[in-house]
Image (cartoon, rainbow, N blue to C red; front, side, top):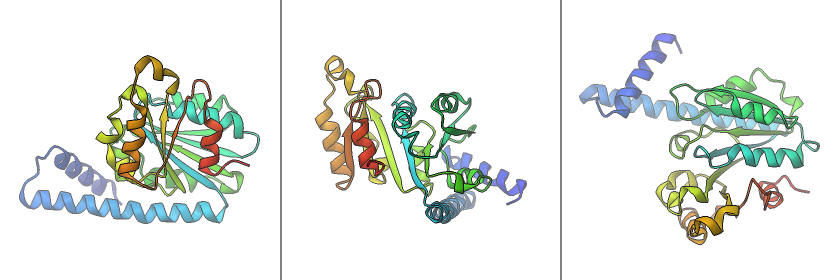
Length: 240
């Protein structure tokens, strides 16, 4: 794709997101969006096949800013760092704060700064893995950009997707953001160490996740205390 074509796609996506397109221009914007989604799915499938070819287990982690995504990955790394050769791909609008945190746990990390884009897509991941020797890894975590809306537009080619929320976001957070839970394998409700203080209705959160996706596995955790991190590792399929 040429730079000119990419600029045109960005222009139409911005117009469409602001509901400013009309007539044929809007039809073109919709068609471009559909093409992008289709191409992303094709590329994600290729990424997944590449991971499988190298016997790499892969996990995409999504959630709002402050839900505890990085903290949970850190806890997992503390327990699995000596067992697996791990690569963590961190997505954020700017900075490499999360990547720096990950590297303190003796894991390799790569930071992707998306700028105005609010989620990682398969193209971002493909750009990384095509420049890496995948024979050097057993396990790849992808930490998506922090929000509960945009990541639902793009699959990344991983074996599993985990959506993390925290009780500090309120008991309605799952009910209000159904799309990610429909397409996730595991739902993590984090920061349960604050349950007595906040009096959040955790049972409602669990019930909401199950109503949205009857096949989803739900687990409560505390990244601060480490509660249920071992159980999460087993659910992901990384246990003994």
